[in-house]
Amino acid sequence: MANSDQVSSEVTYDPMPDEEGIRAFIAKCDGFYPPDAVAASIEQQRSWYDALCAEFAFPHPDGMQVEDDVIADVPVRHYRPANCTSNHKIVYMHGGGFVVGSRDSHDAICAEISEAAKAELIAIDYRLAPEHIWPAQHEDCHRVTQSILASGKKIVLVGDSAGGMLAAGIAVRAREEGFGDRVLGQALIYPALGGDLNWPSYGQMANAPGLSTDDVIYYRDVLKAPMDDPFAHALSVDDLRGLPSTFITAAHFDPLRDDGREYTARLARAGISVQYREEPQMIHGWLRARHMSPGAKTAFGHLCDAISAMVDQK
Image (cartoon, rainbow, N blue to C red; front, side, top):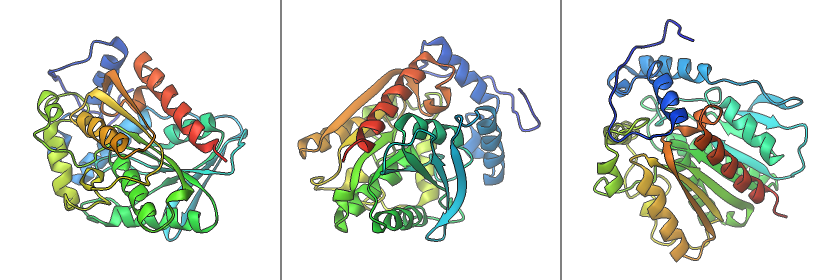
């Protein structure tokens, strides 16, 4: 449904998925958040993005307890399903290029993951760029996860896109600080991990729907995270031994695709248990399409299964 924030855009993408559901999703998104959104002001980008997220909002599952809170001076949101059976916590870091997004933007996604995994989920509302450049985002996530770990709980780290970058960095830092054994796993959803812009996906998918290579460059520039910072870009870490079991889901039509492929390969070489899925008809941001695209629905099911297996550990 259109509103005052809706935009009109006729766009031709190359390449483009064939699946009708994801093509309908792309068209719907372009009506709210145009492909050249990064050329607009930060305020306008956030207005468009909030309108888009509101369009894909869904009610919380029956009986779910949802509460806004503050942990270590960082705003968070707790989701506790009626059928909660795990003592472990899922910690979610949202995407949005570090420029847009909040605990509201990913509300329905977090609720559905929590419900599927039968575990409490804590979504972190970290500070955004450009008002707050790196490492503000990482430090917010670190303070929250450290507080949870210090309470004796074990966690599963989950993040999409920029949030996948944050989750991977928190896993590395937890290992460095001696808390690695309390991180049961990490699920990285089309993550940005500091890949080489000369890798094939950055050329092949430069003008793909959902995210372009120019967008990736823009977000890196706004964030100002050093490319050799191991907490920012997990692909810069030389030794990956001791990291938790990992699930990575990448989208074929995504310039970040090869970040997921390469990190999977490096984790496997380091002896880490890692599962990789590359969704053949999906684009960056497919999480929001899970109720209108068969491919996204299937991908979301595999993601929830992987997270469930992690939180089911003793």
